[in-house]
Amino acid sequence: MGKSVAPRAHFGYNYFIMKKTATFILLILVVTALAFALAACNNATTQGQLVDAWKNARPYERYTYTVDDSAYEGTEGTYVSEIIYYAAYDAEENTDKVTVGDYSFEQREGYLIKSTLNASIDGKKLLFETACYFALTDGRNYLLPYATLRSETVDGKQTFRMNGVYSGSTLEYTLTADGETKSGSVGLGSPYYDNNEFHQSLRGVSTFSSSFSFGFSTAAVNATEQTSVSLTFSVSGTEEVKDLPFPSLGKDDEDKEVQNATTALNCYCASLSRATTVAGASQRLYYTVDPVYAAKNAEGTHTSLSTYARDDMWALPHVLVKIVEPYNDADRNEHTVTYTLQDISLIPDAE
Image (cartoon, rainbow, N blue to C red; front, side, top):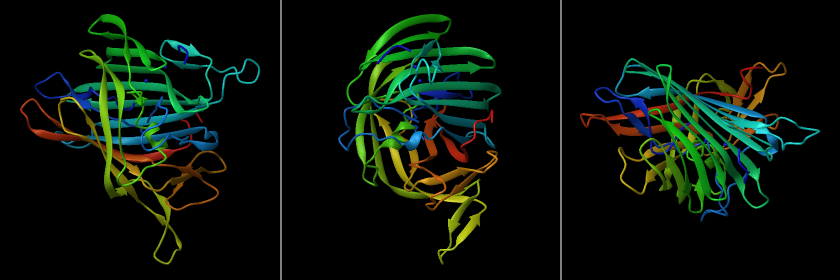
């Protein structure tokens, strides 16, 4: 893969500034998910290869989540994950290049997954941004990470930035933290995933089931460690997530179409854990068992959703509905940070 690159979440990172400490809560999102991000350069997992979770070059998806830290009243912010399709670069037909941080490149067909966290915690304003470009396929494998970016800003001041590219199974990176910049590389075992947006690429697992489990490696590159870590993703069953705050079409007991004011989705409940000791317990991620169906109206101003199959709508597979991450504060009190889906849109903000 060439040089050119990884939010929603990042394994081995802390997102929130806690009382009595200036550390961030460890956010070990795999996800997209989506993770929905997310992003393997693998020949095959033990369960089978990833597939294209965004078939037919679906041009755009946006998932918006509320962020709720149980240590505080109310919600603390929003998390937005966007998936943008790019056709392969062509000097005559498609001259748009993908840019990820400092890298601009002539891309293979693929998807840019980028995420933004805006939150206010303990009087501090946080802006965390991540992005990763994934080539759709190299002819054998799907969703290969190409270039990755992570930026953290606190009260308007950038405190951390990492930008990197994948060369084979090696991530070559440059990071800036505490005013110091350094470069390096991390070699990864197979299968491997990008650490910024792979929660979304996990939506492309073709063998999701209530007993699905596999291990993989990812690069943890932050201010305190730059290394390869082993993660285990394991589904323990299914669970219905109710009262999601967006309307959808559904079917009643008589198989008649109904308009629901809120939405309930049956989800695979998965845990994500790290092989080595890390603060906090395993993270829980919830991916829909069945697709969510979505379509824009004729004017392109509104996205309608359905929980049953419709030929006039896109099928959105294994939507990442919720993330729950436990952590301990400085006094060893147990808390959680919960990301809950509040909106799905096929319409870019600029439209």
